[in-house]
Image (tube, rainbow over all chains, first blue to last red; front, side):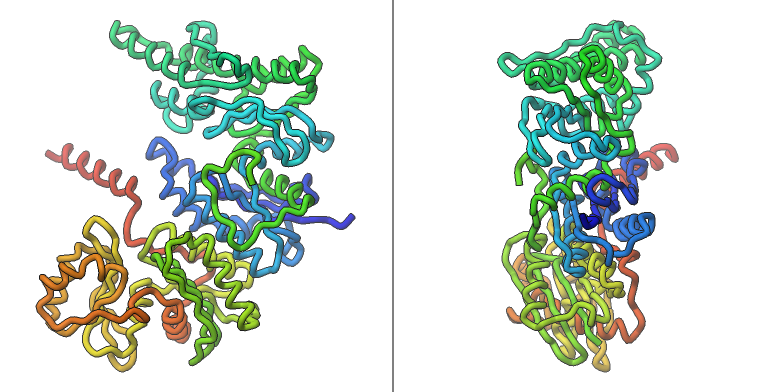
Length: 339
Length: 241
């Protein structure tokens, strides 16, 4: 079989990224230019600033990805790009750039769903992993529990009714003064705290056993802090962070295991930015071991937004014959499984 | 010299190819549709119609701002992608210079007005002298009345153009004391042909850049940056009191 090399571009939020992926599984390069330090000044990602940074960096990032992979555009077979979901202005930079490169080099263009990319990150380091498997997708904007039935085909079992898991982490982190981004900071502080110190609610949704809700636990944390403040009591932030994190991780783990058991699936993967949360990884891995399930998770570098995962997803779309036209647009609220 | 030019700075999307003194093709659409969906298909159409070999281009020119932030980035990212893929230099043409170039060798002053909302315009004042475009007032974001007063101060006949004209027609009528006119429909909005023709002049002057270094010139900070700068300023004033 002839090698297929894909140049992939990702700019859906605050990382400008490019990668060259060979045959869907071999990462020849993975360049990420993060803007996180810039957005810390504002306590979160500012869309206009993100878009401006993308356009300043994108050519350098792409050129670096080609150089690191030691390939030229002559050796590229297709261009893959994230076209949603994400920040529209940020997405548009990557989409316009990818289209222009593909057009100028007469290469096929493959638009990729950002979340499909996150799921596909699992293929990078697990050559044996193939669909079907169960995947918990947890990030700043998404919380989904899906069965990956075949490459790029999903059955959604559960989703969040309100905040995404990562969003809840960010909001709680802000409330307890940890700043942005909240996930890694809560994870770190939690190590010094007692996860059983405070009992926070674990939301269940009647009739929808795999759906999630995190606004309740977030409110409970805020209430707890307000009450402590009114009573003039000092809050143990480490205990608070650990207890909050335990509540979120418990629900994510429990729903995932229940779905696996109900559907008789023994391969469990996690994906998305929050999948690099060490407590979550450990909890799901342990639960999988107890049940004799195979557990898969990407290294943290492939959990964060990156273009390697987009290249992997693009490869499987490419193999299915998916080609996008020169009128490809950014779709900020693109749904999972939507084309 | 063969130049491809793109302008997606406003509601108009425009693509043109100029070779020396010839306009080979121009495709201009003044209709509300996202430039993301129109710009590249327009280039594709032109390429097919004129059997354009992109490799034969000497440079890619782009209206580099001011304008709609998103529109500018679509044009810039397209130009940067083409520049990267074709290994061609870019020419950044200030949007208002491109507009003024529509009115080549017009007598008197040329004042393009782009609606920037909040009673502001992106504007500048230009004239042609010795068949060359000269900047009288640098392009900037300004209050509409400020630029009209500035026109009065300059005291010469002026031609207005741009999408700000219909928005501020009344203000112009009330405020401007010098003889003035409005450019007609075929010349009063962004035209990539003018961007390309002006880019030829830029090329002769060696004013090119690499695709990697090109970025739009927004003339305005983002709202978050403006608000943060304001907070910092107040904080500083507070501590100095």
